[in-house]
Image (cartoon, rainbow, N blue to C red; front, side, top):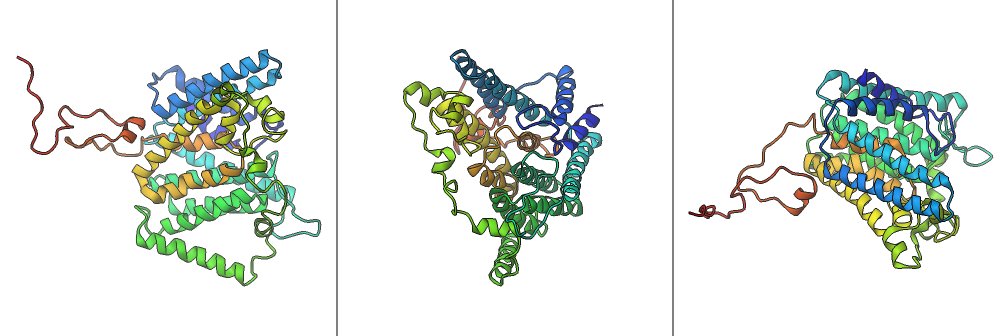
Length: 406
């Protein structure tokens, strides 16, 4: 039952039957999966999960205070989103992917959801090239084209992660990347287009050597970038919508970080530390009726410096784990695309992002390697929840552990 619910929940992600910010069918199915997982499993939380839990509690306190002092009661949806996505991370990070049923639930769900998104875009009509009326951005079954673009980036990153972990075949990974690329290009999302270029450059190069960022991988990535640049310089890409929109960057007053909410004039120390809640951060207290278009910086307005640091702490540990596992190659494929899109788009409530984080934190496919005695732990290891040091491990060469007291 659990693998089936997980597969169905992932499959339904591109189907938006209700307006954005409300519960979709995928959320209901994933909630059932989470309920069953927690009903028979004792959970010891990791540090990234603890950060998200504290962020959810802070969100509930701040939004509750904002509601009590005049904000709309809909503000309380924000801690509900955070709580749900935190449970998604906790649940998926503990799925036993060495079990074939769960592994194929994730892979099958990703493949089915990408196929549904691609078919819906084709059915409702889309164009890769410019039309007379200007840009024609497809949405398929999503509510807006930016959702479609970032969904494709998350799918491509998850496919890349599974490929690097030897859980996904190269051919299926390439197929998912091809479909994701089409979805991004048809969405005409500039942030997703930039993220796609990074992902594909290192993704395709990883098919040459997926163990590390070797000279062969670098040569492959640079060759792909050079080929794209030569095609662009020759005018072969001029009629593609996403290329023209990238060229148009900076052409209007919203194409800079200041207009996207990065200037936050805090009026008092409490607002700086705890924020002012979702509604007041959005409608005029600080951002002049513009929602902060940043996955991370949005938490600065909503929940202040404390909320921002809690959320960033999760990303820091996630980054550290991927770097430790797969080095710079894994970092460029799994995390950098979300960083690129997150700079100018607020995807802090987007469930596929938390599926990507949960899948990254899942260590069931990674053989455990005990830390050798005598190797000291670094401060970053403490953040990532590394195993405790053996007794005497801090002793330097030629030094013995202290003798027990008589």
